Length: 126
Image (tube, rainbow, N blue to C red; front, side):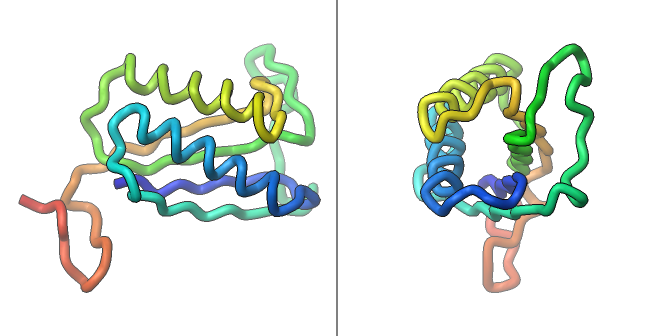
Protein backbone atom coordinates (compact mmCIF):
# COMPACT_ATOMS: atom_id res chain seq x y z
CA UNK A 1 0.00 0.00 0.00
CA UNK A 2 1.72 3.18 -1.09
CA UNK A 3 0.90 6.84 -0.64
CA UNK A 4 2.70 9.00 -3.19
CA UNK A 5 3.30 12.73 -2.92
CA UNK A 6 4.50 14.49 -6.04
CA UNK A 7 5.73 18.07 -5.78
CA UNK A 8 6.69 20.36 -8.64
CA UNK A 9 6.72 23.99 -9.71
CA UNK A 10 3.48 25.53 -10.93
CA UNK A 11 2.94 25.90 -14.62
CA UNK A 12 2.78 22.36 -16.01
CA UNK A 13 -0.42 21.23 -17.71
CA UNK A 14 -2.74 18.45 -16.57
CA UNK A 15 -1.34 15.89 -19.02
CA UNK A 16 2.21 16.48 -17.74
CA UNK A 17 1.10 15.96 -14.13
CA UNK A 18 -0.95 12.88 -15.00
CA UNK A 19 2.00 11.32 -16.84
CA UNK A 20 4.16 11.69 -13.73
CA UNK A 21 1.52 9.88 -11.67
CA UNK A 22 1.14 7.13 -14.27
CA UNK A 23 4.89 6.49 -14.51
CA UNK A 24 5.32 6.34 -10.73
CA UNK A 25 2.35 3.99 -10.36
CA UNK A 26 3.55 1.62 -13.09
CA UNK A 27 7.06 1.52 -11.62
CA UNK A 28 5.67 0.63 -8.19
CA UNK A 29 3.53 -2.17 -9.59
CA UNK A 30 6.63 -3.52 -11.39
CA UNK A 31 8.37 -3.96 -8.00
CA UNK A 32 5.45 -5.66 -6.29
CA UNK A 33 2.93 -3.02 -5.23
CA UNK A 34 -0.57 -4.46 -5.71
CA UNK A 35 -2.47 -3.30 -8.80
CA UNK A 36 -5.10 -0.65 -8.03
CA UNK A 37 -3.25 0.51 -4.89
CA UNK A 38 -2.99 3.99 -6.40
CA UNK A 39 -3.15 6.89 -3.96
CA UNK A 40 -1.33 10.00 -5.15
CA UNK A 41 -1.32 13.68 -4.25
CA UNK A 42 0.14 16.13 -6.73
CA UNK A 43 1.05 19.56 -5.35
CA UNK A 44 2.24 22.54 -7.35
CA UNK A 45 4.27 25.30 -5.78
CA UNK A 46 5.30 28.87 -6.60
CA UNK A 47 9.04 29.30 -7.07
CA UNK A 48 9.25 31.02 -3.66
CA UNK A 49 7.88 27.87 -2.01
CA UNK A 50 9.82 25.24 -3.95
CA UNK A 51 13.37 25.45 -2.71
CA UNK A 52 16.26 23.15 -3.60
CA UNK A 53 19.99 23.19 -4.19
CA UNK A 54 20.51 23.04 -7.97
CA UNK A 55 23.95 21.44 -7.64
CA UNK A 56 23.82 19.20 -4.57
CA UNK A 57 26.05 16.10 -4.96
CA UNK A 58 27.18 17.36 -8.38
CA UNK A 59 23.77 16.87 -9.98
CA UNK A 60 22.67 19.75 -12.24
CA UNK A 61 19.00 20.33 -11.35
CA UNK A 62 16.69 22.70 -13.19
CA UNK A 63 13.40 24.39 -12.36
CA UNK A 64 11.71 21.24 -13.72
CA UNK A 65 12.71 19.31 -10.60
CA UNK A 66 10.05 16.85 -9.44
CA UNK A 67 10.15 15.59 -5.86
CA UNK A 68 8.47 12.22 -5.39
CA UNK A 69 7.94 10.83 -1.91
CA UNK A 70 6.60 7.30 -1.60
CA UNK A 71 5.39 6.00 1.74
CA UNK A 72 4.98 2.24 1.60
CA UNK A 73 5.29 -0.94 3.64
CA UNK A 74 8.76 -1.96 4.75
CA UNK A 75 10.36 -5.11 3.44
CA UNK A 76 11.55 -4.49 -0.09
CA UNK A 77 15.14 -5.24 -1.04
CA UNK A 78 17.75 -2.70 -2.05
CA UNK A 79 17.64 -4.15 -5.57
CA UNK A 80 13.87 -3.57 -5.74
CA UNK A 81 14.36 0.02 -4.61
CA UNK A 82 17.09 0.61 -7.19
CA UNK A 83 14.84 -0.86 -9.88
CA UNK A 84 12.06 1.49 -8.76
CA UNK A 85 14.31 4.56 -8.94
CA UNK A 86 15.54 3.61 -12.40
CA UNK A 87 12.07 2.80 -13.73
CA UNK A 88 10.72 6.13 -12.52
CA UNK A 89 13.63 8.18 -13.89
CA UNK A 90 13.62 6.33 -17.23
CA UNK A 91 9.83 6.50 -17.52
CA UNK A 92 9.67 10.19 -16.76
CA UNK A 93 12.36 10.78 -19.36
CA UNK A 94 10.09 9.24 -22.00
CA UNK A 95 6.87 10.95 -20.94
CA UNK A 96 6.52 13.74 -20.01
CA UNK A 97 10.19 14.31 -20.85
CA UNK A 98 11.82 15.05 -17.49
CA UNK A 99 15.60 14.85 -17.30
CA UNK A 100 16.88 12.20 -14.85
CA UNK A 101 18.77 14.96 -13.01
CA UNK A 102 15.38 16.50 -12.17
CA UNK A 103 13.90 13.38 -10.56
CA UNK A 104 14.28 13.34 -6.76
CA UNK A 105 12.80 10.27 -5.02
CA UNK A 106 12.42 9.62 -1.31
CA UNK A 107 11.10 6.37 0.15
CA UNK A 108 9.51 6.26 3.59
CA UNK A 109 9.04 2.74 4.89
CA UNK A 110 6.45 2.02 7.55
CA UNK A 111 5.18 -1.05 9.34
CA UNK A 112 1.95 -2.50 7.96
CA UNK A 113 -0.07 -1.67 11.06
CA UNK A 114 0.50 2.04 10.40
CA UNK A 115 -2.21 2.19 7.74
CA UNK A 116 -5.95 2.68 7.87
CA UNK A 117 -7.25 2.58 4.32
CA UNK A 118 -10.79 3.42 5.38
CA UNK A 119 -13.55 2.68 7.89
CA UNK A 120 -11.20 3.45 10.79
CA UNK A 121 -9.76 -0.06 10.53
CA UNK A 122 -6.14 -1.24 10.43
CA UNK A 123 -6.56 -3.44 7.36
CA UNK A 124 -2.97 -4.71 7.30
CA UNK A 125 -2.46 -5.19 11.04
CA UNK A 126 -1.92 -8.80 12.08
